[in-house]
Picture 1 (cartoon, rainbow over the protein chains, first blue to last red):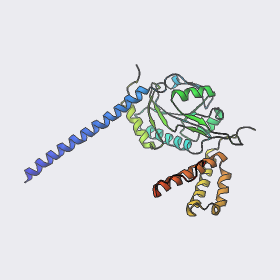
Picture 2: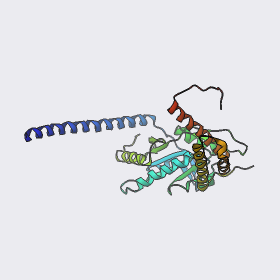
Picture 3: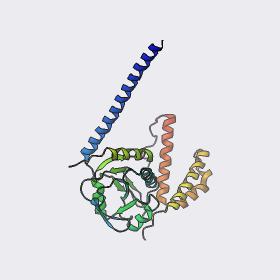
Picture 4: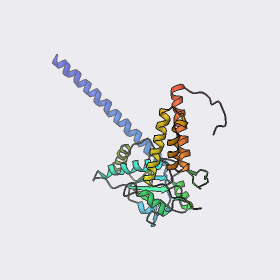
Length: 210
Length: 82
C-alpha cells in the first residue's frame, strides 16, 4: 500500500510541478509581449526643456541613467492628483527600502502652466516625497512634453473667480534609464503593485533603443 | 483680479472632511438635502467653488452607478440634463 501511495504522490507532484512551470512561463510570455508592445510605441522620445521647482532649467537628458516615475497633474486639482502623488510617494518609499535597487526619481509635471509657476509647484510638491521634483515651463514647452508622452490635458471653463479644472490623463509613467517609457500604472494600481512592477523592470532591464 | 493660490494640503484635507461629513448626512437622510443645509454651507465655505461643482458631479455619478447596480438600467426620462 505504501508503495502505491508513493507512486501516486510522485505522479501528482510531477503534474503539479509541470502545471506551475507552464503557468509561470505563460506569465513571462505575457509580460514580454507587453514589453514589446510598449517598446513599439517608443513614447517619450525627443528632448524636453522645463524648469524645476527651484527654478533650474531641466532637460530630459538630465534624467538619463535614472529610473523615473512621472505624473502629470496640476496644483488646483481637487483630489485625484494628491491621491496619485501620495501613492507615487509611497511606491518610491517602498523601493527606497531595498538598498540593492537604484533610487527612483519621482517627477511631477504640470498640465496647467498658466497658473502653476515655479513658486506654485514648489509649494505643491513639498507635501509629498522629499525627492519629488516638480517641473513647469511655458505653455509651449509643457505642450511639447505632453505630446511626447501622449498625455491628454484640457482646461475646463473658467468660473467668475477665474478658477477652472484641467481634465487630464491620470497615469503614472515609468521611464527607464534611457529616458523612454517602459510601463504605466493607472488609478487602480496600488503603491505596492507599482513598486513590485518597478522592481521587476529593474531586474530585467535591457535598453530599448541601440 | 489675480489668480488665487491653490489650496494647501491642510486646506485640501479640511475641504475633503467637510465634503465627507455632508455626504454622510445625505446618506443618513437618503439624499434629503434640506436636512443637511448646515453641512452643505460648511462644505461650500471650505472648498473652492470649482471643487464643490466637481464633487457634486462625482456624487451624482456615484449615486447613479449605485442605482444601476441595484435597479438595473432605465433610459433617462429627460433628455438634455446637464
